Image (cartoon, rainbow, N blue to C red):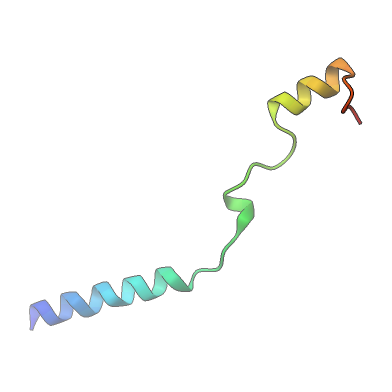
Length: 48
């Protein structure tokens, strides 16, 4: 019975992990990166 309970617990964990919504803001950098900031400060061709 302990093995069955463990397997069911693991299946529940996998199911819960797959249900989580995808949130790109948690994985991607927000704002300009260091190279973009350098270009903006130097007044390069891509400066805004």
